[in-house]
Amino acid sequence: MTTDHGLPLDTPVIAILRAPAATRFAEIAATLHEAGITAVEFTLNTPGALDALRDTSGFAHPVGAGTVLTALDATRAVDAGAAYLITPTVCPEVIAEGRRMGVPVICGAFTPTEIHSARAAGATMVKVFPASVGGSGYLKAIRGPLPGIPLVPTGGIGLADARAYLDAGATALGMGTPLVGDACTGGDLDALRERALAVRKALL
Image (cartoon, rainbow, N blue to C red):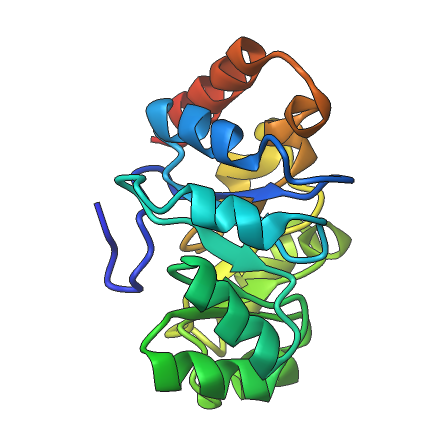
């Protein structure tokens, strides 16, 4: 299922892959997809991330690129196969380049001013980062004056508190280690699949 925002969100989660090397990224993405986590972010500051994106070219669910900081990053990621772009901060040049290429951009922000500015600049969704600093209560407070902005809280969200963020108005959640665990560094993919299924069960 592709949402109005252009991301494949069968489950309202974006899995974040960050590691010393991207050698297992494609395999991990395939495992997550099989378990129903269909939005996956390959962080560009992981060595080999662009090659890993190319390795997913035949996937039914396209993969996105994260830690995109410049227009050049954006172009290279899309050329490698990224279907959406995610930034850690408000990066107007990435938003502009994404719009030029017709690719959704999830722009990182934290304060109400940053969140509004990111959306006004053309961000498809806004990643509220680091979400754990304010918790789900902060997200709920943001939704009051800014109800029309799709928010994706990210950073420090575990399975136990994931539901609270959705109840507070999140469109989706960015989840790294609590979901991915040690899979990027050789961990068991069956265990990854079980975590993904548990996340899906808790949120749907």
